[in-house]
Image (cartoon, rainbow, N blue to C red; front, side, top):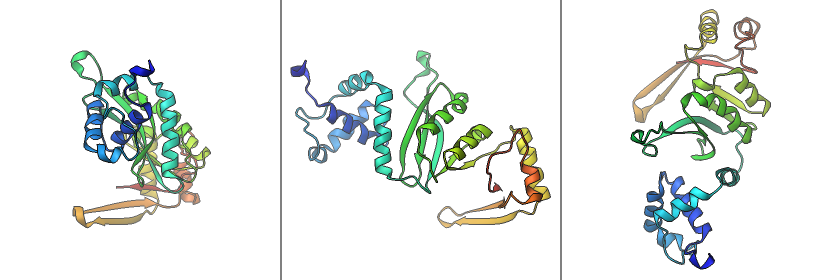
Length: 245
């Protein structure tokens, strides 16, 4: 079998990784990236038979153990990011387009990503069946990450007491969105802004010609504020401030 191997596994994985970091999505993109940057790649790779074909990329990645590859990429991501302290980790789910045509009976490929905003790199992923299953995948993804002193931001689907508690237990901070479908917590928050005196914060992005105004309760530990936000069923642990656009 050794004589039938025309390409090195390390070359294939390296090109695949760089393609992904360059926003590539499929095996054809890997070939395109390799041919476009072949001169650069030869400074680091052997490439004994040039750039592999898209079929070669497909065969290699289809037989790799995805869990082992994910662990390797997580370790690589940690080395690249160095330390996540005081950085924002955005956890969000996306449905990849073009990978699961509905004509074949597929419902799409949903991926839950942990994205470090400052470094613009993904440090963790989980495949989920659909959008509704993100709520069970988020705790599993957080469990794999080192979030000490980092800020974890999640959209409204992650606004759960158990998720906030898990982030605090791992010595991180959280930024969670809240929608009206969580009626009890939403109503309590609205009442809080009516009963307490919020601070107004205004930010302007001139290049977007956009002004964003936010009302914020910056200290929910005060007795007058704490009563409103410490409901047993919906209170988020160690909550520091609440904002509303």
